[in-house]
Length: 303
Image (cartoon, rainbow, N blue to C red):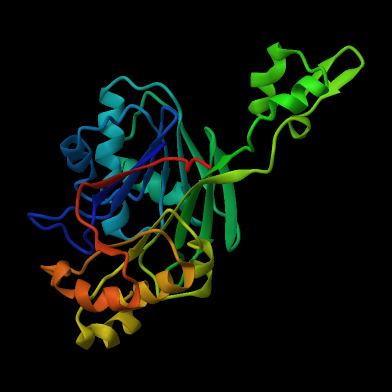
């Protein structure tokens, strides 16, 4: 099961009812943060989740509303006597930007591991899930992220028995392990059926629509996408500043066919995003306005 929480849904500046951009996921005892805008610590506390399991933080880009909450978060982790390494993933310049912010958090009791994204796309394996970074179209170098959890095929007991595979090896084969016993080699494909549908979440913000985004969000369980503006008269501003309209995010979802679309990263001038849902749902019916603390538990589908 993958827990997903949209901690902050605002862009540009925090508001009394809306924190800046951040997404948090939990899987298998590991927590991942994408972006860390101002107020992220408070949003985590309000949700009732813990800082301790956060082992990876990904950054879409280095504008202040996406990274300004990092120094405080690092200090809080340090004050909690954390010693485990923290991995940071982001565009070119990651270590330079983070170290500049660390002027106010110079000493930490845990190491930082920097993973700078190279090229238009790159994948990272973490604790049973995969993070795929893909370049989007903003006015600075910016990436979206897809989180995927694969699921192996069903274990075929009859095949295992017919091949005389000892039962003590079954669980290890289910986990994908190749086992050698004497002259015999047991492989997962000997006893597993075709791979089953896993879990997939795609997240992108601060971008114009691109075909890459539609491809990445294809058949996702959840697609979280920037909707900077709902007002039709703001379309020119969206194009100029390389942001996205609600309707454009919905068009991407129409192409990708995820199970749900959540809009996020609202302009401070957009007070009531729900007012635009009727028109947006004409394009993609399964659209929802994101809000701080909006959460979902995604589980594997039984087949």
